Image (cartoon, rainbow, N blue to C red; front, side, top):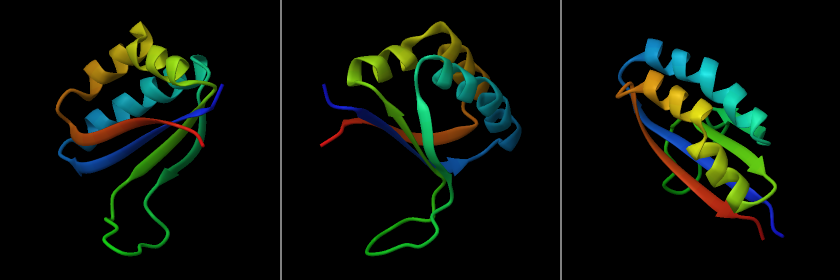
Length: 96
């Protein structure tokens, strides 16, 4: 079974306090669900049409595990804390 990668980009942050509350709950919820945070932060360098956006990459053992992590009560609580504090794009991709 191929690994899965959760890739999140932050298009905009309107409420940094809400993002901090989300991070305090979301990181532990995702790692408890089997996620391994591989990278997070601002890009070190941009090419092509790259955007200066906070990006997070989390590895899971499978797409099903990543989806279950997202749908878990603990992660849903993190999303509730975030509310409309940020506009994000989240994708779960199967590894090659």
